[in-house]
Image (cartoon, rainbow, N blue to C red):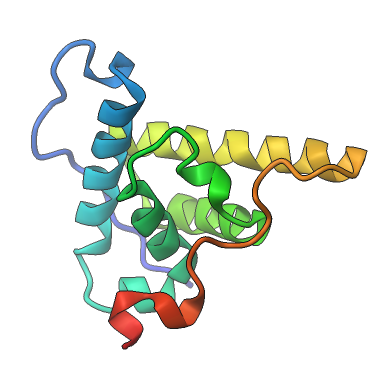
Amino acid sequence: MATCYTETPTKAPAEGTLKGSRDEQRRLMLSALTELLDRHPSTREVMRPLAVVELALQRPGAATLQDLSSTTVRAALAQLKGLVGMWSPALAMLRSALAAGVVRLEAAECSGEAAFGGASAFADDELPWTR
């Protein structure tokens, strides 16, 4: 059973911040996820799908999460839901982005098309903390 952490934002986001550009939203989600994963040293090793999402968010670009595999997106969403007890706006935005990705994936699987690139952008042996 995963340990449940309560997310308490260190700073309240400025008004309209979460409605900013995609790059601003990506940075907010990355910051919140990094803070969450930094709370316990082994979280990135144990929860690899969330660690892969963190790495994906470090890359600027519109298709950041769309490059991840369906397995990674589904697992990261489940792990995020299991870790967070009180949702900050940035983590709620990340949860919504992952949930939307799952919906796109399910629709694509039903139609036989690929919604995302299909393969994870990061193989397990490419993760920096596994070296």
